[in-house]
Structures are given as C-alpha cells and as structure tokens.
Image (cartoon, rainbow, N blue to C red; front, side, top):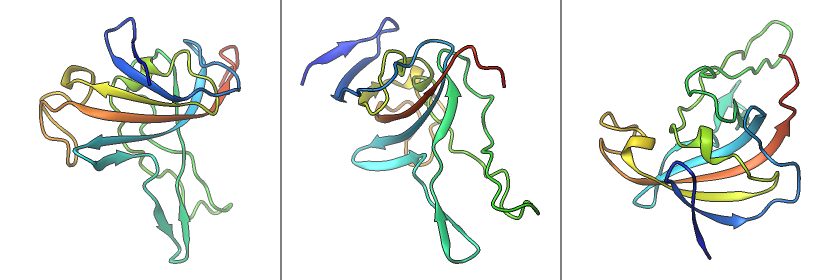
Length: 150
C-alpha cells in the first residue's frame, strides 16, 4: 500500500479504488465515514438509530466537496407523511473530510491520517481526546453533479 500526500499536506491511503464517477470540488457526495482512535470507532456515520422499537437506520453523510464544514448538521429522514421520524442529528465529521474526498471514485475506500488541526483540534470529540491524531476511513457512495441546484 502506497501513502499519498494531498495538496493540503494530509497523508492518505487508498484501500480500494472505486470504479464510478469522480468526486470533484463543488460536487455533492454521500459517504460513510468512521473516525478511529486507538482502534476505537469514536465518530461514525454508521451509528445506527433504533426507530419505533423495531427498525434500525444508518444514513450516509452528504456534503459538498471543498465547502466549509458545518452546514449539514441535520439529516433529512422522514419515515412517513406525519414526520414521526424527521431531522435526525448527524455525526460531526472532521474538517479534513471536506477536502480529502476530492479525486475519489464511487465505490472507493480511503484511510486518512488526520492531525489535530484538520480534525477536532483542542476540543476533541467523543473518545478522541483534544489534540489527538486519528484515522478517518471514508467510503464514497454517491457523487451528484456540481451543476445541480438544490
């Protein structure tokens, strides 16, 4: 496995190169991500939520590649017309994810070594302590066109 270095200095490994469309700056993408610190998954888009006592969902995280983080804190999930299960809070990904997905292809998996300044900084998050370096595992699920208006 070969380590690569992104333009912003982040080091990453492509675990699996996808075969689908490429994530470009400005395109909207859906990913699953896991932040792993000392073999503990501390933050994940795969965190399941039990709904109505019998259903479990795990929703992908959607964002715009290259955009500043922080605008997509809510998930759009509505189970039925009365909105019984709407607007689930989304897990907060590290800043690095907004840039490091550029160039990935759908179906691809990438592991990124995230230093504190590109991660959770002096605040930390869940089991990731303040000032910690951790691994970010990303799986690119979908790329939507950058020309598409929302």
